[in-house]
Image 1 (spheres, rainbow over the protein chains, first blue to last red):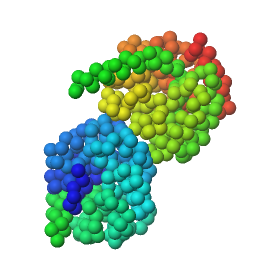
Image 2 (cartoon, rainbow over the protein chains, first blue to last red):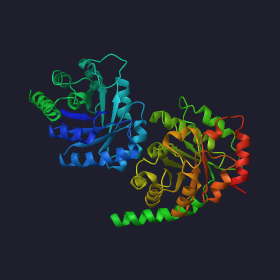
Image 3 (cartoon, rainbow over the protein chains, first blue to last red):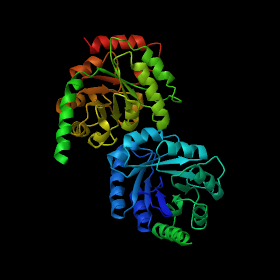
Image 4 (cartoon, rainbow over the protein chains, first blue to last red):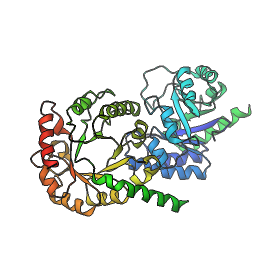
Amino acid sequence: MIPDHPFLCFITDEIRYPVEQARHALGGGAAMIQLRHKSASGEQLYRWSVEIRDICRKCNAIFMVNDRVDIAIASDADGVHLGQQDLPAAEARKLLGSSKILGVSVSSPQEAVNAENENADYVGFGHIFPTSSKEKYTVPTGPEAIGRIIQAVRIPVVAIGGINQENAHLPIAAGASGIAVIAAISRAEDPEAAAGKLVRLLELNRLR
Amino acid sequence: MKTIQIAAESQTNSADEPSRASLPRLCIVSCGREPDSSGTMLLALMEKLPATMPCIVQIREKQLAAASLLSLSRRVKAMSNASQSLIVLNERIDIAAAAGLAGVHLPESGCPPDKLTPLRHKMLIGKSSHSLESALDADIRGADYLIFGPVFDTPSKRRYGSPQGLDKLEAVCHAVGIPVFAIGGVTTENAQRCLSAGAHGVAALSLFNDNATVSGILYNLEQVLYR
């Protein structure tokens, strides 16, 4: 279910309306949408999830919910993406069953190995470049750190953090299976065009 | 497929109904100020619960991330094994299920209860309500009990306007077929008026804030709620 070629994952921006953002990203060719909204109510998250799930199905894209296993199951999303402060991956897997996709954010090879042992389907690794979307107190890993994660696990590694049109080729060249972005799409003047450019960049690197 | 699922659901519901009527009459809501998953304040409060009076204990610590809520839930559950208390977690049925808790308590704006069937199994689903409409909706969608309020004046809820009052509590209690707990400014003095209005029991948070007075308040409430 996870694409076997470099793919674009779009994570919704907390300060914008998520359904519209998802529509733009999918219009540009994103293969995965992650609904991430920490302050919305459960009912609101459920309604957004159902809407985005439907649009994703039409576009053959994967729909993931951040943190909330309950909302993912209620809305029949394709999976859940967990941070290190969220439910442990093994617990989430028990609730989700084997058919749903489970992604885990990691910041070290050890965390990646743990995620794989707990039946994660992919890991998100970062932040690769300096990023404005989230408060980060650690230094960026740089694209070269991706290799150490890839060597540690067999599951796909998705690069995240400060990725944009100027640097998107670097994590792919370093072996990442995909890239995840927020601001590069959500805060672009034309979000759909920005997503389209990133997708074309990924395709270009695939052909190389 | 759909028909089978609905039949199975209604069967579970009817099997659950006797337990609804036998729910404890006191719901204690945690203070929301636990700094971490150790649950020091809640565990100290639970130590004071009399064995004679089972309660619903709602863990409501929105400031904690899911991993901490899971640890806290497991800790509180381990503590509750001796008593008959039912431990429920606010909002997150996924974490409640992972911790093996008795149930979940959904805020009024929480995920609709009927959408949580795949995670529910035998768990109780409670729902907060601040209007007759949302109370009826929660009942139709399969909630097991309601917490309705604020019934009386309470400092923490003043910014939402005037309290609902006993008349609205009575209207909700008569309109729904599930137990209703009155919340908001409930004291040992006015708890009886909630029961007279048709409430199954009462729920409170700040009433139990002072550890020195908890035992006395619990004793007095037991006299009112289980008379």
